[in-house]
Length: 562
Image (cartoon, rainbow, N blue to C red; front, side):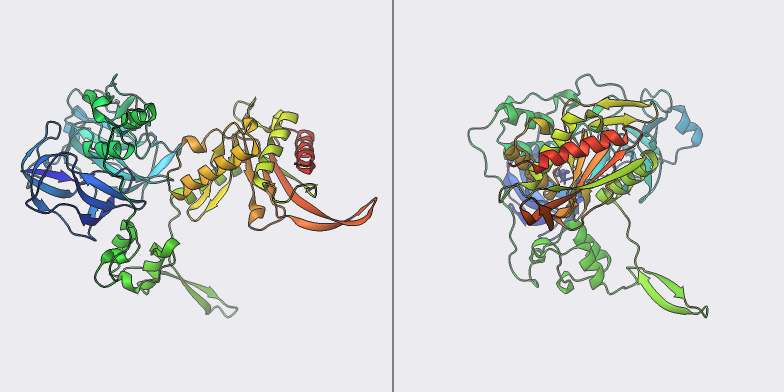
């Protein structure tokens, strides 16, 4: 008997929900035959069979949430040249408690690698192993939350776990000890890194759906079944793909590379489509639009999803909806804070529930703190008369064009500054970071090479980045390399502001809300359309004169006709 455990479906999430089974117990299936539709936070994914054989047991039914790594399907008489056998009742071997002396004798310390977000730390969501467990190479050990997603960190060694550093909720710094191993074959010093694998390539290192880089080694990507599912989605013939993973294993990066080079199949199964709500709220769990995480919270708080008032997009139920429906029960603790009056007695009491700042909002908070500690900011404000703009002018494209004009006139503000070394780097190209507001927090993706784009190309690239944010598919490369930033807060509200410079950048331009203003001209009193501008700059890196000339060049470009 063989057991197929639910693999990471490429979303970086800890679980997925069963939408519907495509097979039943007793069916005989072939390798790659779709068995079940699983719903993640973003899409419905078909999970294919990794074996040829007869299905003896299906674990779960429609509406059940299955953790990644949990048993999904059991097979009788299964055959697979690539999948190792695992017995249905087999559990990970539990080692006896390890003495400190034994742990030091052949121990290895695994330090938290950069998970591909470019952030200095990550938060422990939950451990998937315990002290004393025996693990294999690539076995998931812990779920870590970064600014974008929850990432499973695999083991770089085969051995016994001697110590886990931290617990759920702790923030671990990149490069700090995460797991200590004992009884690792060929172990050297306690902080030695894994042996370099010359066959591993650094493509996609550290991304949620790619591989995780450990020192100089690239740890293999997700399970074979997920690679096959991706190949089917991208219409890639796996027989024409050369694997770059350990022992020639085909990775997701290999499949994407093959798709880009045209190694497609002549015919493939149709791609999975989005699921639709069916049935009624009382007979079908999927009648409620809620992610697996929200469903898990509802179970934890003993909340019926039917009691929740959906306030999310497209009628989806959010975590806040579930917490409100719990009516402040024991499972949702609150803190009571009191304000005292002149008499010393409490006059007002307020019940509040603390909310952890995580993900994108946490990354934003850290970036703001870094700016506050490392930048000497100054802000200049002025108005641009944009009355000459034609009707329907693309304002965002004009802002980017004006920034390019300012950078060409005064390169000192299209620059990076290193305060420790007292060095600045003037960039010949203009890469504009665009501040984009979202429900999850502030994103600042980058329009690379804006100085080589026309208005249509700028608008297209910004829309592409917005779509990636909405679908949670924004990559690290999309957010790196900005030489100057634009914040168009005026599209919501606000006239002037003090935008925050993001080091090592030197400047950021804020654009406020348009207004009509009466002006005295040679023709008399006329109504002109005015655009408020706020330019913040790091006064260590450039002079006030340079900043003023930069702003003047921007205004000149904005006031010109299209």
